[in-house]
Image 1: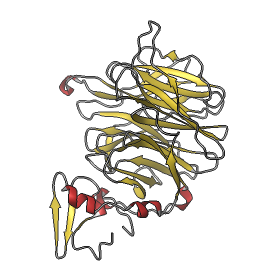
Image 2 (image 1 turned 60 degrees about the vertical axis):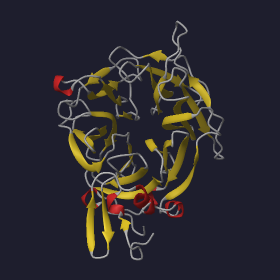
Image 3 (image 1 turned 120 degrees about the vertical axis):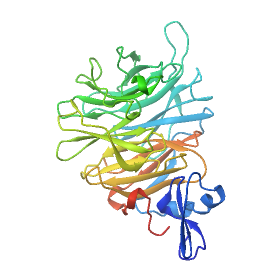
Image 4 (image 1 turned 135 degrees about the vertical axis):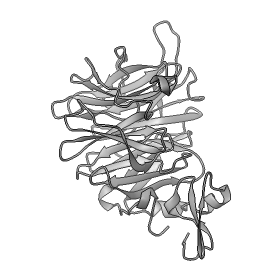
Length: 389
């Protein structure tokens, strides 16, 4: 849709639920939810989405989904193949929800999804599985972290490994008490081999009593044999944050970005390899209380995948930053009714970026991006702007 020919349109500058309605000679601020008819009229067309610079390909991970619900994907590269995992079942939290996985080979074909972890304990009782995280360290097997339990308030951390690129998995081990592993997003590996795993807890209770969402960095120097927990990094009486993702900057600093209940993506910085962290502060980017993920590109830039809105999960975007502070719009991945959420992102050995995310909680979408071909635009005052839309 071209704004020059539209008589009334919601601007791309207001990709959330609060929008500016442009009418010739007037600008009105619409508070709260945008009327569905007006909101739908402002959505980017599928043709426009597919024509964006930098978008290489898109498909679905695996064949037809084996379960009604698929959510919270993760992706890793091992021996030039891609491995994707997610949790799936009848519905989130149901005791038969398992961790499923599919692999993409060199020819681009996906293997049939298989259940790789079921949440069955030694007594034979079965619990729901949650939030898998795949990670391939520089040296060592492919690692899988995931959670098992009735809910995020009672789950515990598990870890398994694969020496054949995710085709088979060894016996999963329960992580030590107080350690959950990376809670949604992948670890980063320091030069000395230490893994920094971004983690968080979701304690039930009143914020006035310092109960709520807390973030931690869990460190392991030996690929999960021993652990050290750093944090909590935030005070839930001031800000509730979970599911952090980590970025590494050229000057050696680490940046944490996180989901929050405050309507903004939150951030914190570390100058000592993640041993200590500064205050948690808001970024200029919105967050509808939904998961995000980021990757540090080999050219030094940071690439972030997130829902650029303060309510709902029907818009999923990519932003890029040179310094982790000033973000530029890069791609619109989704802008149609439905839920598009919980992204995971990596840069593969060929320099391309691979993104997976929950597509209406029915499939896992896989998008390939060439970061060298992205056309970037300012996000004035945090409002999305895409040229040509």
